[in-house]
Image (cartoon, rainbow, N blue to C red):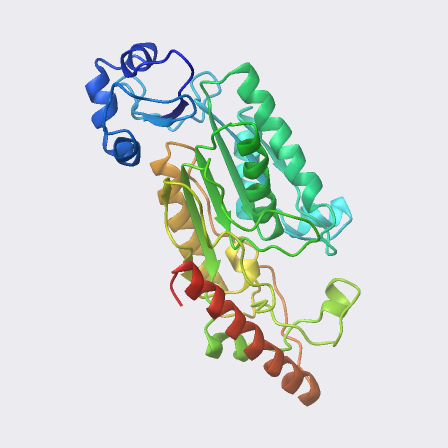
Length: 344
């Protein structure tokens, strides 16, 4: 299924004919065009800029578009935060969901993969700009192709920002796939899914108090990143919150789906000592594969066992300080979820 943006002089009949659809009625009455019909109850009155779902023709059905000769989409993928050194990053993120997706796309020449920002996050805007430029160039050369974005952690917010930049050029985004998207950088945008995105799905970590408090102080950002206010940190990352909880426009969107596991597990790179992570990764992979398949794209994400890791033994000061901060952050996160209308 493709997304078509109406141009001056278009009619439903001309659009249907150019896409091999037998009649304008089939195009107009397709279930995916419910929002379009509500907006344009008179099929004779359509406006440049309107977005219309174009159903697959019989000859196109059944393909997952992994072959560059038949693929009708292109995707930009931005991975999550990790070490600044590229070699260390590749090693630590080798099995991430975005890495798996990106490897498949790049090997078939139907997309690009970008590593995510380093710990300070200053590169987030740069990666958003690069994803935007790639998709805008594709659109200029092959406007019939569906444009897609995917991202994890800060890379999720970068993907949202890239969609915002495309919206400024009146370019539609067919699909957006987010893995625990968080906005932790200086700069505008990247928080709310813009109105040019026609379909989005977002898997986020479930910040239930019992699960979060259970793992307080079990990792050390001082060792992991080289800096920390206190030596103990939490793999659930309650301070991160989430972006991508709200959306604009009339596309096919759902509230972010919660999964019990660490922030790493939501991106496919969990911790072995977090007992929930292995199952969390499997569930996230299966859930996202279902939606990737629905959009008729590559959908073979797999869960790899987290590498061996040992929980740090937190001191009492770290625990008390961490628990107090956790409870404050979870209260803020619940407020954001409530405002977005999502699940607690």
